[in-house]
Amino acid sequence: MDKKLQGKYLRIISPVSPVKLYCSCIMNVVLTVAVIALYVTLSVRKEKLANVSPGPCYATCPRDWIGFGSKCFYFSEDTRNWTSSQSSCIAREAHLALFESLEELSFLKRYKGDSDHWIGLHRESPQHPWRWTDNTEYNSLVLIRGRREHAYLTDTGISSSRDYTYRKWICSNHKAILCKGQ
Ligand SMILES: *[C@@H]1O[C@H](CO)[C@@H](O)[C@H](O)[C@H]1NC(C)=O
Image (tube, rainbow, N blue to C red):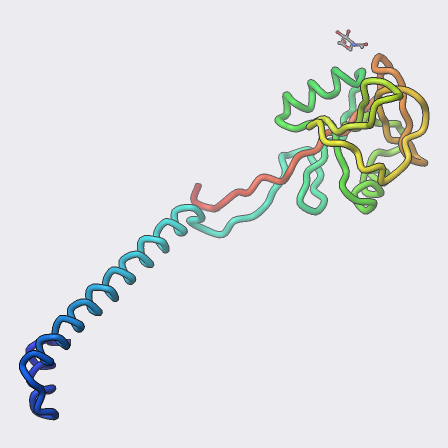
């Protein structure tokens, strides 16, 4: 609002002392500056958000991978030992498959076909706890059979064997977020 006009208006409706009027003018200026500052801050924020997501975004998996929930899974055709399977997953910017729920596990079982597949569980020795490839401890959602150090998925559950056996394997990773215009 026009400051002069506001001042005049105040003088007409109320016989205010010049000191009071002076104070209210200062208050007006302070409030106006505050509102402008807030507006500028908010629009800068909006712009920043817009830069992060310039268009509609969607979660996606690489070609030849299968999406389930927020993850992508790769089922190999080839066979390798456990260590070499993990290297192959890392080369694909992933890791040997981990599952976080029984739903994910039954999805893996459903899609693996008839063959057994290496997954991302291993332990140093039968006395050590099972760990995922990121070194987090396995919560024992499903029992792992056998007394070996490397786990693989079978039709009936999870078993363990030595590293050197050649099997197919499953890699997993989080879906990538792609935005249009990037
Ligand atoms: C796994 O396979 C790789 C490549 O074939 C080989 O170099 C490595 O020695 C094997 N490791 C074990 C433990 O069998």
